[in-house]
Length: 234
Ligand code: XBP
Ligand code: MG
Image (cartoon, rainbow, N blue to C red; front, side, top):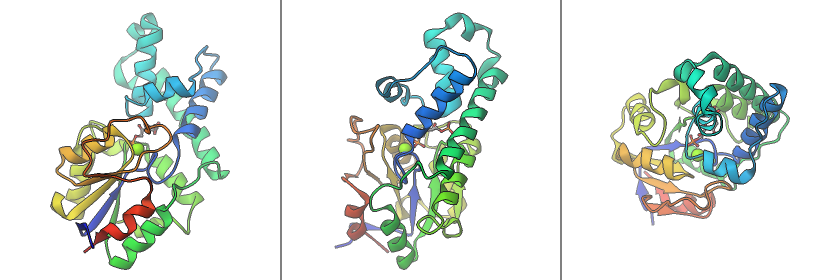
């Protein structure tokens, strides 16, 4: 029985298409070490810091927490020191993805293949940087064919990141669809809230870093994308 009668799948990237956050964390830490900064994020710390979506925003939140004097000297959200750290982290992350250090989540290749068989439109709805999404496509050309996606809405495309619904509103606008004809796939509480805020039904599949998130606002919580295969249809 089809549970979601839809025309499009709107897919989050980090934690949904692939288990990316561990490589993000290691890339942040390497960036900090290269810059001579005494910062190193443990798995536990990073799990807490993920409440702030966006890598640049996460560094800013960290500085405000551990070095308030430095935070007071920063030139706002576009501070060049923070921007340079984030740019280097993005570079290191892309190198890691290209080396094959990020695996796709179980059932994602099969879900995308099924969606294409059904003729569903595919879109990316993420707060991560476009370069990171392109790197992932580049590393998995068969399972994640770039041409299969009608649009990629990324971190640079919105003023406010998840849990703000802007990313989902923009994806729907670009696809020309009402929210009820799409289904979002997310792994985190922030992602679920963003989709629901735009009126989009959402299936949550927890990832390594979001296993403890409250995903109660999702329409359905599943263990893997394999479980979603029989639930989508036109
Ligand atoms: C992902 C994020 C991103 C990544 C890092 O959230 O919050 O910030 O952790 O990517 P979601 P950038 O899965 O909800 O989209 O450093 O490029 O921001
Ligand atoms: Mg995510």
